[in-house]
Length: 460
Image (cartoon, rainbow, N blue to C red):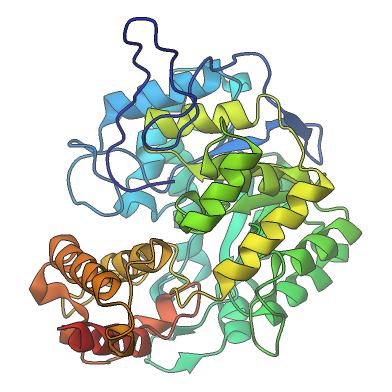
């Protein structure tokens, strides 16, 4: 859910009532300990609708673990984990690459302090580099996951991010289907993981999906043999209708949800906030949501949408700060399913949002590091923030509304220099394309860098 440090604002002065929401938009008040909504997994697991995503854990200095090289704050991770379990969260999701390879180890420490029956763990077969595609190398990744998490078995195991492109050891570009076959089929790793499930060391086997919808369909066509126990998809009220299913393109989440529901496969949700962007909507959307429910945070609407469909087993949220965790616990303790009117309202907001010229970056950092030092997620984050806050303007508009143009121009340029050091800005991108095949959202990063740099030059 977010970037910078969040300060609470639950202060009472004299006889003034406590605010309904904090200055940052988080709901205030009691955090229930016994009202969490649960869904039932394929083998009877009582899974909390709120799942704890462990891709961005707090570090010393309160900086996201994926964005900073500093040490993870184990004490804070322990506190967040304890609080989550005390308030009904039962599912914790991690993977070998998260937090620069440190997430599994940190969560192993935090979770092992609790009785094993109190929590479920999901992790992934993250054999992304071609030198890990061999059977032996992939098995070592799996064995290290069990070791780092201090587990004898793993509750939910996934093939990590099927559907993306890659290069082989010789530098040849492979299409998404070839990558899927190389990572999981030709080397026998899927068969190995199925054997581990038979032996009880894996309780549920599934996959997470980013990218080419044909690979998603290919994996589901194997269900009669594999018997998938769960699947992790990107699901939010923008992606529900506004990511078209095209030849070689992504699937919108309605398509994926319906396909999985047909096969009776429980669904994990990632990116309920679309990289945090659905927590900071444009002003008109915020006004409409606040009029409907003044006490609800803007983010809570996205979480209610993500959890309202009955086939959703758990909604993963990366909760770096206590305020994020508390707000999400309130939203799901218990879940209030969306009404037809509220579905329609969010669809109107999604339609408007999809027409904004934002970059569909979720801040996953898979494109990093850039060997030329470009801060790719930072540039996209600043650009998208300015779009959502209406702090963008074309030079052609200057004559029509000089005051608004000057405000937008200054907000963009000053904020850009503060957010991204000048040597890491878009004008230093040489268009090498090394980042493109790493991006789960299939963003043409060099083209976007050129577009944003062109906009910056016009403003200057």
